[in-house]
Each structure stands twice: as C-alpha cells, then as structure tokens.
Amino acid sequence: MKHHTLIAWALALGGLLALPAIAQTTNAAAPAAAHAPAGLYQALGEKPGITRLMDDFVNRVVKDPRIGGHFKDVKPAALKESLTDQICQLSGGPCKYEGADMKSAHADMDINKGHFNALVEVLQSAMDAQGIPFAQQNRLLALLAPMHRDVITIR
Picture 1: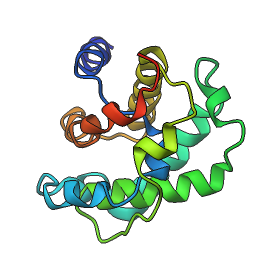
Picture 2: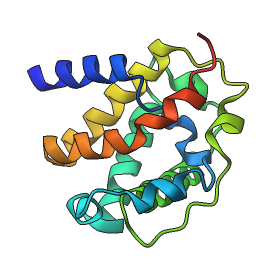
Picture 3: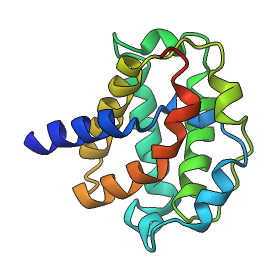
Picture 4: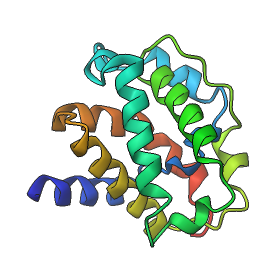
C-alpha cells in the first residue's frame, strides 16, 4: 500500500489526470500518442486489457462517494467506450479517440484538486485490480498528466 501513497502524493504534486472527461477529449490526445512509451499498449493488454481496465474504472468511479456525483448524467457504457479509445490511442494502440477536448468537456463540472486526486486513486485501484504492474501504471499516469490543466476548473 505504500506505493499507492507515493503515487497519490506524486500525482497531487504534479496535478495529474481527471478521467471524467478523458472520455470526452478530442484529438488533443493524438499528439501524445506519437510519444507513447514503447510497449505500453501491449503492457496494458492491448485493446481487450484496456477495455477491462476502463470497465472496472468506470464501475468504481460512478460509485465513489467523493466524485460519483460528477457522473450522474453520464451513460456508463458510452464513457467506458470513449475512455477505452482514448487510453488505447494514448498508449500507442490503433484506436482513434474522437471525443471533445478536455477543456470543453470539463468547463462546467466544478472540478477541484480533491476531486482530481480522488479520481487518480480510483484509477490506481482499478489498475491494481487488473494486475497492471506498478511501472506500467506510472507510464500511463505520466501520459495523462498534462490533462490536469484543462480538467481542474476550481482553483
């Protein structure tokens, strides 16, 4: 459990991630795919593994008491599909993400750092449950890191 604390601390400092609208990011994800760490897509289990991860993640996040309310109007199946395409593309896979950009997707969501950090914790739990090695978790989180600027709307 110690590594979870280190990741959460590092993410809080770095201001990483906010997946509620990763499912709604546009081709802002496309440039990152060009810089995906070699082998990450394969390490995540390719599209079937990413699909399982996003299924687990969305199931957890909609029930999380800290941030589930942000997802009350979201169709879980659509969110899972969109997130799968985005993570697939970001990690170097063949998928094409065609959702909205992060800034537009989160503009009216009132997301603060606490919400953001809770989301990271939920993603970490889903990755642990799916047996994704710690090093691969960090590689994925590093790809998602730049998105925080457009996701946190309450400073």
